[in-house]
Length: 376
Image (cartoon, rainbow, N blue to C red; front, top):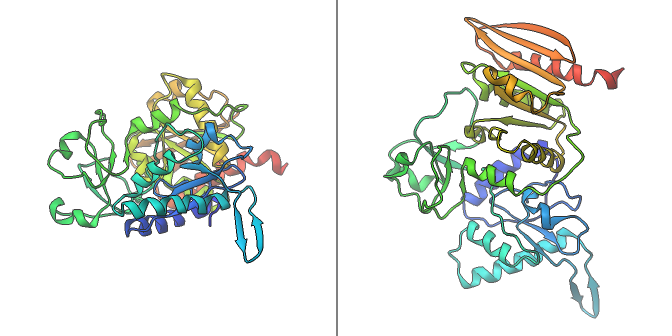
């Protein structure tokens, strides 16, 4: 089973994470269309594609969550009749299931991470890069304190003394190496939001840090014809709750039927199912190519990129021809929202704390301007 519909992604993710937390191993076919599909692309699912496909899996498997490429054309004997299955990812998935089942017959203690590694080893094309999306968390223990936000995590959290609650969690989230020194995290997954190098840390599960995203950008092979969706650049003052604004804006677009690829520049974004992207300073072309690959494979309708308001002049140079430019600043009890659309400027004032209705008004202004031309 599976879908390429972005609106079904979050529900499926919560469901899959619950089942994997409880020990289920899930193997899923990726979409034959060549777009990202769910649940196959999830980190804690073994995503399968077929050999012989005209799609360029050998280069782009990392973007689509494919863990193994195996045969799908099999001969099935039914009494005296032989039936040959067709070239399809759906018929490759049972082959991968058999590989996993045979491996478990030898060692029933293997984790989903170890089984994914085994599936990669059995792939008929070489898969050398492991870069996981931080989408697997069911229950997490957070060590340290991050940015205060009204936005909700996409997972459950468990509080208390770590030694007493560690049996209830699958993931530890930490902001510094010092926080991990007294925690036994060897059999857990890890989301690391600090700046240190964590290559030598002893973790048996999945690991994500900001270096993971940098590795994805570096190993991206997708080459398109330029970004073909609208770009909205949202410059937010530091005192404003950017995670809340982004999650609510992403939700508003989704309710309107639009798949918004929503980017923040802090690693903490991943806790809210937002996209983390580092500063595009070292290799702007590689940065932009990665955005383009993501929006293509995820069939995004637009890009929303949140940047610091004090550095907007620097980052606007990356997309100088962006479709919408918004700045959101705080002046005491008033929040000033300034829109710029190809020279046209609009200013709105929001009193007090920005809530969902305020963000929906911002969405409606953006949506109206972006669809103005097609509406005539």
